[in-house]
Length: 419
Picture 1 (cartoon, one colour):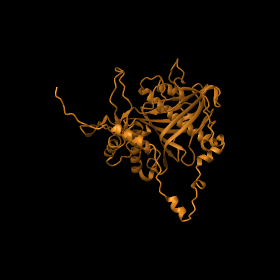
Picture 2 (cartoon, rainbow, N blue to C red; picture 1 turned 135 degrees about the vertical axis):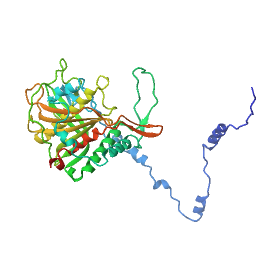
Picture 3 (cartoon, rainbow, N blue to C red; picture 1 turned 120 degrees about the vertical axis):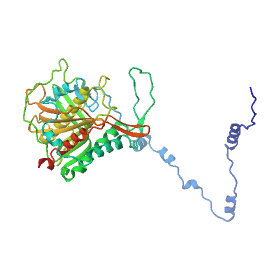
Picture 4 (cartoon, helix red, strand yellow; picture 1 turned 45 degrees about the vertical axis):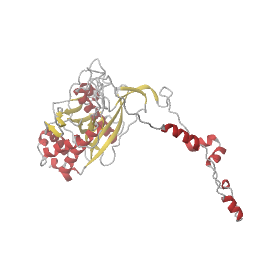
């Protein structure tokens, strides 16, 4: 063992303590200013006659008055029990943005009283699909994908990864673009590309962001659809219905009820309807909804299936269509004089689900009324992978069919299409 050099250092901590002990009491230094002023017959006035500390005045006031003026009256939150002023003994079944139905699309068809006449979108879209194409269309879309998913400067801590086979294993935390921002970037930029290319033909449309709806229903009980349209394309004219009334059979989900997996609450405003649709642009043209993996989850903590994604598209389309109908024809409307037709785009920034919904009636599945109609395309992947490989941005397996469908949705109802 080698003996190292001994360093003789002072104990600075001990010196600091002595300094504090010596300087804790300050002695006033006599400046003889008072003697000089008195010799010259200059009067000396005590400063306390003019300076009054606010705390002395505050101590003279009543304590309750101080609390009322400074803090204000403190209102306690009502307890979440039957003493709450909004308590209802009849429960309300709520469908929200984070919900998915346990039986997926079949349960959504029963809930919305809708049938799917054929696979795929209406034949009308096949003609519109190739009617309009942008110059250098695929190059623009690929640039939008990389700019939204790779080049964005926002980097936040992403959710914790979990491996079901190794629940105790802790993965390193990843940083990147959060899912809500990623979805908003790619959809808004693709929509901007459609709008800038179509030009003056899109002057009858308006874009709204984060539009919230609360739609009450009566289906053997109280039901409320509390949903959000992440991006809403509004128009001053409605989309024409595609087919007349048709008949069909609803899926059989026995022994389950179509309200299963909806949240049950007792504190709510009964029959509260919230819809911002008013004025000139009171027709929903296309609704864009985002699938945020940090928000959408199954009530029973199981992985979300593809059928449940399709059911989420149908449920939200139905809520938007019912809100549009109630805004136009009144909150108590049952049978519509004119069907409400809208389009829906559901995405997680990688896959896209395109669907069209036609609302013919607000009757429930237990009533023998008109059936609503629903069309949907299969799930399209915009790309297979968009990552950095050895510091180089890579976009693999770009699918041009996605933007073609999006552009045909946007072109539906424009002057170009009507010529």
